Image (cartoon, rainbow, N blue to C red; front, side, top):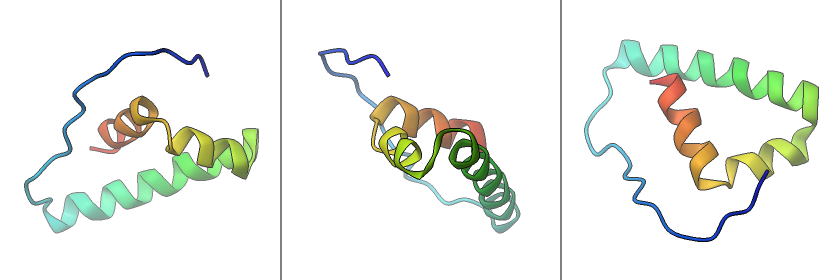
Length: 63
């Protein structure tokens, strides 16, 4: 991934998630995780997960 210097405001959601949505998000997150690990490996997935923009996008895609 490209490294950029700067800052961004990436707030986390502070509310509650309904149980039905939490189940769907967990299922989708597991599928996305398996796909990334399968294609790029575990270390790459952990590196992506630690990137703030990728992490925010990952959560947005599941929500």
